[in-house]
Image 1 (tube, rainbow, N blue to C red):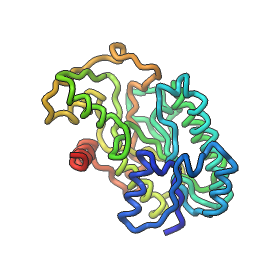
Image 2: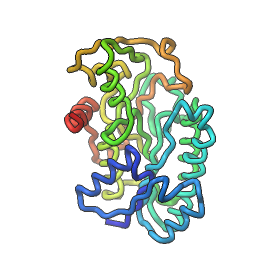
Image 3: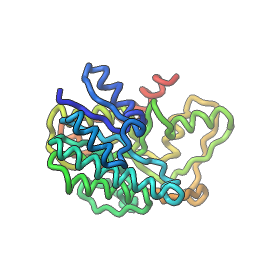
Image 4: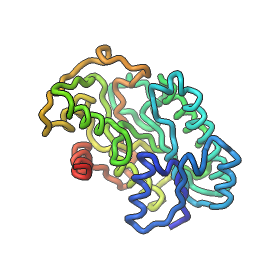
Length: 280
C-alpha cells in the first residue's frame, strides 16, 4: 500500500479510518490539530516534506454548523477553506492523491428528487459555503483527487445525533424531532471503507457522494434509534425547532456513481444496528 497521511486523525471519521487501516495491517502517519495545524501553511509544508505521502486522507474539518454562523465563522473558513488549500497545495507538491470529505450542505435542499453529483450547488449556511470553497480549491489545485460528499454522519468515536438521542432518552419520557428534513444517514465505518476502496481500486478521480442506502427524516431516524427504548418520539416541524444555521429540507444525494464503481453501501438501518451493537 502507498504511503498514507491522515489529517484530523482524532476526529470522528479520522479515528474510524485509523481503526479500519489497523485492522487491515496498513501503515499510515496520522496528525491531529495539535501535531499539524492545517491553518498554518509552514507547518503543513514541513510535515508533508518529511512524510512525502502518496495518499492523503483529509479528514480534518470544522463541523460545528451553528457556531460557524457567527462566533466561530472565522475558524470555520480558516479550517475548511484555507486549511484545505494548504493541504491540497502540499499534497500536489508531493504528487499525492487527495481524498477530501465534503457535505450535503453544499446544496440548498429545495430539490424534490435525488441530487446528482453534477447538480448545481447553492449552500445556504456558512459551513456549506466553506466546504464548497474547499471542494473548488481541491479541483483547482489537485491532479489526483477524490471529493466525497456525505451527510448525517454518525459513528463510534465522536459526538453525533445517535449518541444525542440515546443520552436524551435516559432523562426524558418524550422527545421531539423534526420530520420535515429528509436525507441519508452515514455510518463512519461505511464512509471510511469507501475512502479506502477508492484508492485501493483506483476508481476514476473526481466527485462522489457516499452515504448509507435508503433515506429518512430526522424523526424517522430517531424513531429507529430509540425503537427499543421506553421513550415517545414525537414529530415537529422545523419552524417548531428553530436553529441558527439553515438546514437543507431535502438533501438526498444520489449514490449511483459510487455504486457504479462496484461499492455497495449497506442500508442506513443495517448500519445503525451494527453501530448500536458496538456501543451497547
